[in-house]
Image (cartoon, rainbow, N blue to C red):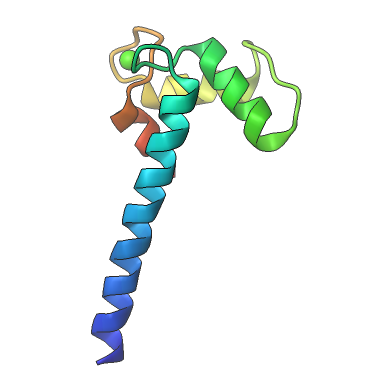
Length: 82
Ligand SMILES: [Ca+2]
């Protein structure tokens, strides 16, 4: 049953991605929340681009994922990135 196998591999992959993103979040976040400054460090670390707090990537991420608008991203917010 190749189809079933594919589904299983896809689920494992998803779980791996969640684990990797969780690790990244913990590395860059402060007390379990990611601030705009933390996200700047994450973007710079993962893209090798210079980035600052007014960068459109930072603004767009917070506009889309900071659902309660407290300028902090939680792990569930962060996991919606992918
Ligand atoms: Ca928030």
